[in-house]
Length: 521
Image (cartoon, rainbow, N blue to C red; front, side):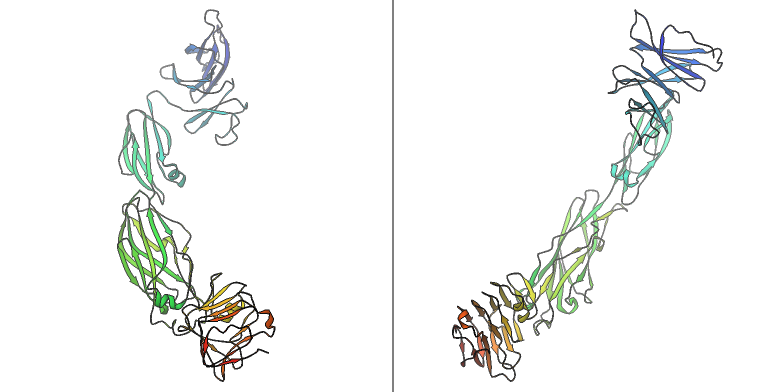
């Protein structure tokens, strides 16, 4: 190739296709800080032809070219861009970028229609923008030819783009000849919906045509209607059957709130609850009520551990919420009052957001949260309670066997056929919930103490005691070690039949038809 004579000292030279670009600073005492970029046509390598020269103030440090775009670095962190117009035979100046970089090295990387520039860090440009980048990212410059305009497209919000919402043409920068009409199409993925166009484009249709007569921006906006199910269950309750049938009309089981974001109104059609627990919802419950948001209806369970559906037509306003409360009403005809429970009964309800039949009014795609089912705290029905630790039992004997010192055992209304209840912890109280008119202990075996007291500071309160079959009297026995006992009280008790109470320190604070001491041997 024939050499080219220049009146300056070139600092960089690069070529592409049949063009060679030379960058330099003029070595002149008159102009010590001028730069130029010259374009040479080297189709005939023996006779290079100077096509054009661009000049400016400053010194040119480095030069690089890709796809007809020439970039040079200059002192002060300036990156200048140029393009050679083949038709006009001219070098056209492009944007000037000011960056925080002083290194002389410049590397370019082409990725699709975008040009990425890096300085410093490594002599080899990275092979991918997102991987292995050891230099400093400077700028993203689009390769633009004369007469072309840029359409910049994007998806909003970023969460929608991350979920897969996109548009045609794809998000990014696109070159078109001026006055081109471009068809835009937004593409939503569940649970997102297209909302509207903003930027230099407007409208609510996902398909729209736009005239690109200048640089324009098109933003496809997406929305996601969301419904949240919140639950606020009351605390666990330990109750006697008498309490839920006689004393309480209805009992709150679960409280829920349906909340929606500010995207759309929602149509609520039904709410379903699933019964759980050891209780028999079909036979034990008289009615189940759902109350709230102007709604007050009742239904029943068709089977044990069944489901119950409350149908309605309610609007949840966008950005608003509706609150509902679920109540159980126990049947007055239930056998719960007639017999002592043979097991502890629990009643709970489960609800999942998919058990709420609700949809946004204007959008097809939506999201319901949260995915985990919500279970209420239990209503527990027991014959006997440890009041201190709130534990339920079916028998007084079972409760006393597990009692600790200074705790209180309480028995609900009913007739307990028991005997041999051994109290071996100090300062224990065994009492009834409503008094002797409601709670009876009937001796279950002859010559067996109903209570056998082995410790002091014991209190027995509020029972009716009955003799069992083949039993001549009511027996309350005490240990032979009578000197251990400081105080044993029997208060507010009724004895049907003779009383046999052992221990000369037993304080007989009761009335009975017959007093006869009986020492347990």
